[in-house]
Length: 73
Image (tube, rainbow, N blue to C red; front, side, top):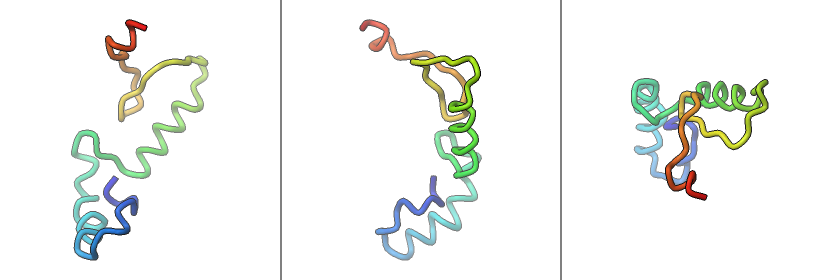
């Protein structure tokens, strides 16, 4: 998430670039997120009424299949 302030130890130019320029592109780039989207996905997972455990979710909050390596265990 470019605007999340995780790169606060970077130089001033990089901080400006990530906070004000790259954050505008985050909703359109796969695997990039915004704080608002991350909160929505986390809330959806935590409020799971079905009570599913051991499931995997993608960056959009949709169920996804586990790796074949996990299934071998």
